[in-house]
Length: 116
Image (cartoon, rainbow, N blue to C red; front, top):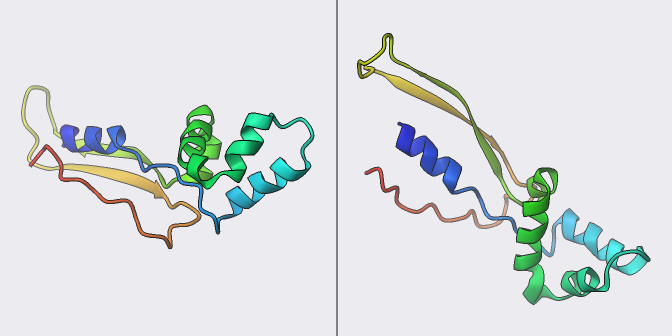
């Protein structure tokens, strides 16, 4: 169970700037009307080839922004075992998933777990 939960934590969903999504539209308005926005950022917002890198950069800088760009997850509750130094008969874990705004798109592929 520990390996499975660690695998989930180590492989978060990728951030994406969707052309139909509200966050890219917000960034587009910023690039048009915000006078203090750096020129490099304005150029990245206007160039679809740079959106993947821009999404990763923005998501890495702020967890709240990441929640606008990707599905987020957190392992909240783990139960198992009744005493020390004994393998538990049953272990449960609860995963909280907060769905990305544009989840109607093709979901990210889930790779095979090394735990199998």
